[in-house]
Image (cartoon, rainbow, N blue to C red; front, side):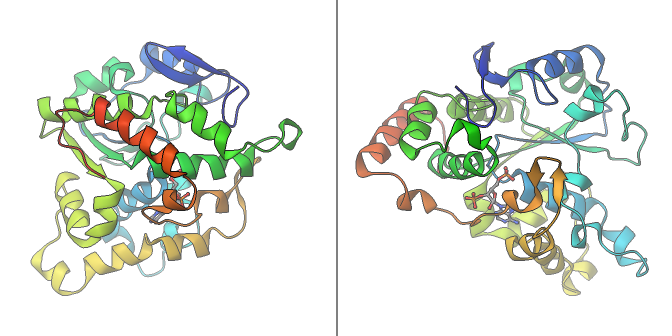
Length: 298
Ligand code: A3P
């Protein structure tokens, strides 16, 4: 009775899809055969936490000199969905035709897999991880709209009450939300130099400074000259909601997933237009209890 797909399965404390690219089966295959490199960098998020934005930013930062110094190349983010520019690891294994294995370094990948279920190869390789989370109330609202855009219409429209019921019980792909966040928060405390822990809210509030921080973490800090020439602003602009939404107005990412579904409002706090006072109170109580003692605020 899951969100977009029919059924979700609980495996090692987290909800997973069954069958297809982003399934338990693929996760197990990754565990067996995915080979991480020490220079790899992985973006990890829960769905609807700003994955597409972060993919754009990481891709644009790491590749910035390539497109700056070659004016004959159109910047990929001006023509393609960010999901085309920075792949998830799952399709690399599922399709059995890895496209990215020996690409230039650092290799950039994304995944939604919880920390405790990451392929051992990623944990052992010493590579870096960027984790971005978002206020659970906004994740719920975003996932609710995404589901209704993509769900097979024969199953009917999901009501917000149904969405709330599932979400507050921890049921979402790769959820419970709070356990996913907590896993990476604690891993970040243990490995502060390997994991960069970001929130969507902070990223939105102070985009410039966070983008500079991200560039340093990715190993490509801005030089003084670049900063003076407005390189940070340029990247923020290319990756802005407004720009990406415009570029992705048409076309499909996959057969059944139109590009535009990844760009809805791009705002902090849209939950206040959806949750009743009671729903908000219930989620506040859950989050307060789950994040007790942790320095996480949205
Ligand atoms: P909303 O539905 O609240 O608008 P994901 O990429 O993890 O699927 O997350 C999608 C959410 O990120 C959507 O939130 C989407 O609008 C928002 N988003 C996409 N691109 C963005 C950008 N460049 N800046 C800010 N938010 C963005």
